[in-house]
Image 1: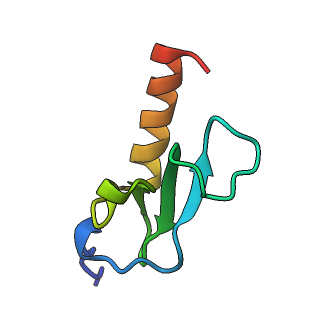
Image 2: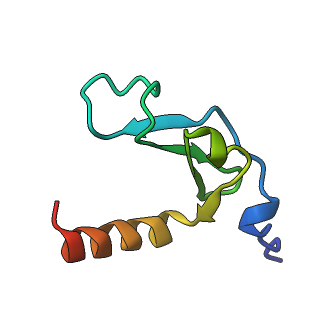
Amino acid sequence: MKEPQVPLYDREVTGPFAALCGGGTDNDGSMESCITVAELAGGGFALGGNKPEDAGRELRGSREEIASFARAFLDQYGG
């Protein structure tokens, strides 16, 4: 019998958030133009920002949802 999937917002973050930064080359997370990402237990990712007002706020999605968004973003806005 297949185990029920835990909803994305009920899954635990499995590690620290990594900063993916734009506008610079150091990618050390110290800039205010970073998107943060962490894997979730059972699959999926939590996305956030590194600005002070972003604290405690995140968007969660499956690998497929986030990849689909990234492709659509690049198609629409270039990259």
